Image (cartoon, one colour):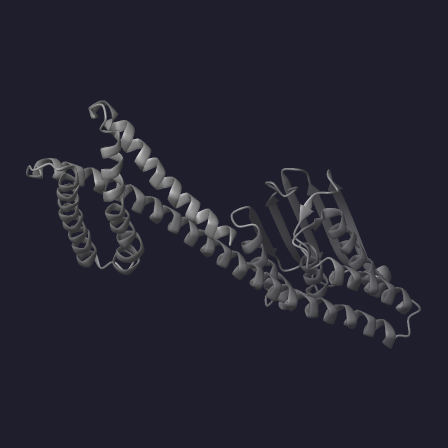
Amino acid sequence: MKFQIKTISVHLLFWLLYIVSEYFANLMHLRPGENLRFFRSMLLSLPLLIGATYFIALYAVPRFLKTERWGLFILSIMVVAMFVFYGRIKWLELLNYFDGYDYKVPIAKVLSNVIRDYAIIALAVCIYIIGDYRKERKTNMQLVKSKAEAEIKLLKGQLHPHFLFNSLNNLYSLALIKSDLTADSILKLTELLDYLVYRANMDKVPLSKEVQLLNNYIGLEQLRYGDHLRIKTDISVQNDALQVAPLLLLPFAENCFKHGGPDKDGLFRVDIQLYADDQKLVFQINNSKKNALESNKHTGGLGLQNIRQRLSLLYPGRHTLMIDNQPNTYQVRLEIKIRDEKN
């Protein structure tokens, strides 16, 4: 209802401004006592002008212009111009009749008025086309945004089972050897599940929460590997409240532990570096690999495929993701320009 009232008000304001502008444009040519005759002439011809305007805007533009039927669109404009020209003559003849004048309507003057009328029609139609374009553009942007959100939700839906599958495998391994660390692993997994349930569906989360999630996951892996795992971390976050997309870092850690493994000396080495300020985020993770033969087959798991798609949707043109797959090491480096992420 509010939208309809606003639309009607805009249309009424346009035609009111037209009447006022016509009056002041002709004010110097009006003789004393002709004001009433001018407004009467204006109001008599106004329905003709309004009808021609809305015919082109609401009929010719959507049916012919938008469908690129140029011939019919030009023909409709010419027909409307002839209709306005003929209507102008008849209105002036009727006005002269009411005033008791008996002289022929000057065609040249009527033609100049029609040209001016068509300028008003063209202005009104242009405003309508611009408004329609903006409405369609807004609708298209909403559709694109909805599609991107749907894709992101789908990718998250693929990520959660993948993450849970890896974590349950970890618990299974500890249970097989009847490790005393099984209970601690379950507690760590509970904390991770809490994050997935309450934060993963948010648009943005504080980077500090992502770091905490990463540390919890690493702690779960440390319980699994024990002394065979050597983790080195260098985390420097200048602003803990910095907002980022959820589950941004976890897939890289998952991929590291899924496809990495002990080096020749039997130690599984992982090096994690994170730097973030108000301008950029840089995340790098390196890990040793099980053997050179298997490393040649590995190009990234489901988590990395998902994160590539999510990054292209969430940070288009604002991120770089580099992967260096060597015979004995695997390295991932992510850089994101933070532009307005705090908002």
